[in-house]
Length: 351
Length: 65
Image (tube, rainbow over all chains, first blue to last red; front, side, top):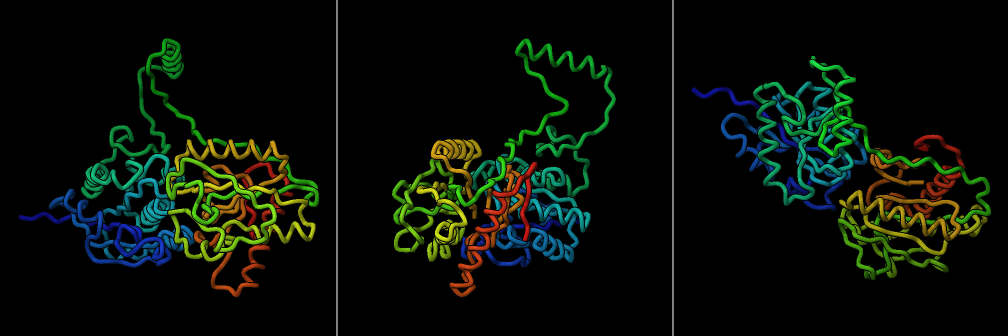
C-alpha cells in the first residue's frame, strides 16, 4: 500500500534551471512541471516519500529589481500545486539568487501558509534579510558544495513534508532565526551568567544565551556644506576598468581593487573602457561604461560649477561573491587614500 | 554615498546615504532610451546623489524620488 507522497515545489534561477546565463537574467517567473537541474538530486534524496511536482523559475535580475512583485508572482505560481513544502535554491554565495530564494520562501510562507526552506552560504547578503522568517540551511560558498548541500536540504524538506516538529537551530542545522523560546531551567540567570564569566576568564568554552548581532555600522559623515568647492570621487564595485583589465581584477571573488587616472577624460567610451565584472550581463556596461561609472555626468557638473572638482582618480573592484573580509579591507584602504587626498565626498556605484 | 540597485543589500552592508539605481546591468543608464534622454537620466541620478551628500543624516537613509 503506497502512502500519499508529500508534495514539493522547487524554486530555481535561470542559471540552475538551464535557461541561460546573465543574458537571461531578466526573465519573469514561470513554471515547469516536475524536476529541473538541482531538483534531480534533490528528488533522489527525497526518495519515495516526497515528490517535486513543479519548479518555479525566475531570472536573478528580474527578481532583485522587483523583489515584492516577483515574490508575489512566485507565490501565485506555487499556489495551484498545493504543495506541502516549498524549497528554494540552494543559492550558495550568490546575492541576487539568495534574495530570490529568501523572498520567495517568505512570500510562500506568509501568503500560502506553506512551510519553506532554502540554503545559502553564511556570507550571502540575503541571509540577514530573511533568516528571521525563513529556515535557511548553511551551505558552502559555491556550487562545488551542491553534493553536501542536497542531503541536508532534503532531510529538512522531509521533516517539513511529514509535518514533524522542527527543533532548535543547533539541533536541526539551520541558521538561528533570532527567535527566543521560553524554557524552564534549574539555575537562575545570575548564576548562569557568573558561570559563563568564570569560564570566559579561564579561557574555557561557553555558549551565550543571547548572541549580539555583528553588523558593522559606521556613523554617517557630516553633510557637505559647500558643494561648489568640494572634491568628489567616484568608486564602483561594478568592475569598470581600462580595456584589457590591466590589473587583472577577478570577475568573481575579487582579491584586489585598482586605481585609475581619469584626469582629462570626459566620457568613458567602449574603445578605452569595459567591465570585468562576471556577475551581470556586460552588454550594456561595455556599450557605455558611464552607465556604471557616471564619469560623463560628473564631468558636466564639474564644468558647470555644481561641484568644485571631480577627483583625478577612481577606484574599482568587482562585487561578485567577494568575501566580506576582502570587501571591508578594500573599503578601508580606499577610504584612507581618498581622505589623504583631501576628497570631500564619494559616490559609490553598485550593479 | 551609495548608488545601488538592490537597496536591501545596501542597507544590510551599512551604507548611510542610499540612492536607488535603475537596474543591475545599468545602474545609471537605460539602453531603451534615446542617447540624450539617457544622459539626462544619469545626470539627474548623479545630482540626486550629490543632494544626498549635502543632506545631514543621523541614520541610514534611502533618498527616494
